[in-house]
Amino acid sequence: MMSFDFITSLVMLYYFAVAGLVLYALIVFIRLGHRGIKALDIYLSEKRGDRQ
Image 1 (tube, helix red, strand yellow):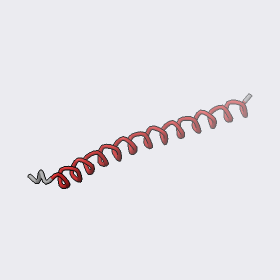
Image 2 (cartoon, rainbow, N blue to C red):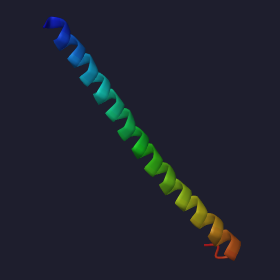
Image 3 (cartoon, rainbow, N blue to C red):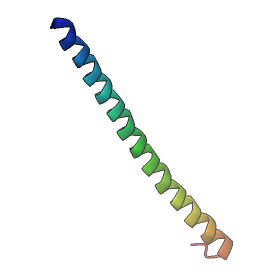
Image 4 (cartoon, rainbow, N blue to C red):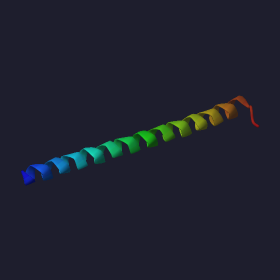
């Protein structure tokens, strides 16, 4: 029984680590998208001649 509990805890630890990495990747992806939209807005405004 002891080894079963140890294996179960390792699997749960692995799942929590993977879930944490997925959450981190999602946050980084959202921030990158936000920066990309800002850069595109700046680029388009310069191309139109709407310099502020």
